Amino acid sequence: MDIFKIVIPTPFPVGDVNAFLVKGDALTLFDVGPKTEEAYEALKWGIRSAGYDMKDIEQVVLTHHHPDHAGWVDAFSHAEILGHAYIDHWMKKTPEFLQYHETFYARQLREGGVPENYIQKVLKVKGEIELFGSIPLTGYLKEGDEVPGHKGLMVYETLGHGQSHLIFLEEGTRECIGGDLLLERTSSNPLIEPPVDLSMERPKSLLQYNASLQRLKALNVSKLYTGHGGEITEIGDLVDDRLERQKQRALKVYDLLVKPQTNFELTAQLFERLYHQQLGLTLSETLGQLDYLIDNEMIEANMRDGVIYYSRL
Ligand SMILES: [Zn+2]
Picture (tube, helix red, strand yellow):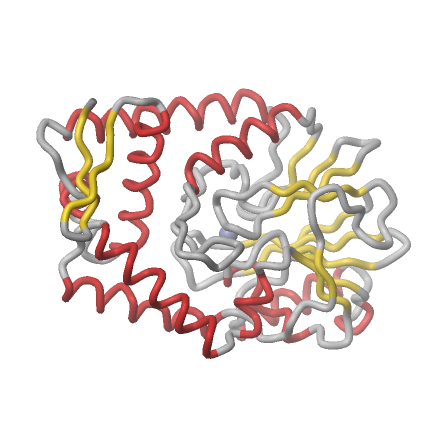
């Protein structure tokens, strides 16, 4: 792959994000960084040092919709913008979608046993949605597609970290642009997100994510270009390591379940200090472990007065 890496600063705890400029029959930029001034400068400078100009970019392809990856689509209104169809909800931000989004999260939080004052606090963070780009996609990519202008660069749907997550594998070289599916130094958080069909049915993000990791392992990738940090070549070993650590975290949740408890109660014990500041993130993490334990038939979930209680089997 004729690929050039551009490192872009972000205001998020994750640190820098990577974009990749790929020259094929088309000149395509994979991911565009967050919509900040600093990111714009880094993007412009990066494209220049590869010998091109912003206006030369013919296509933008997004690995997923998160704001650290999909913010600056707004700088490429002249280009084709491609990605998973789900991304369009976040770009268009219609009043209907924003209302649905709030209803979805409020319901998840109430079912998780989160006190009402905390619920309002979490819903307010939705201000972050302003950091998303605002240009609708010009086309959709899905499982099995070939990226236009890049022969043999195939699309694989790998949901979990996000409900729009795609990776792009070059058939011949087995080189892959992997977004946040597998990162060099940190484990990706499988966030709670509204489902692709915009129903009230919550996707089991961690189970999706584990399946996507297994899928990646089976793809025989020679080099993975990641969304944050360096490239990865020993994929199988790292996937095994991540899955094992995740299992250990789930067993920690199991240990706490000496009596039936809610997600909120468990999260407050697991993340004593962090849960106040990062409630959405920590609740997502615990819920993932609960889904995993249910999937492994170790615990069960029972709804009482609109709140879900988890207990050992
Ligand atoms: Zn990211």
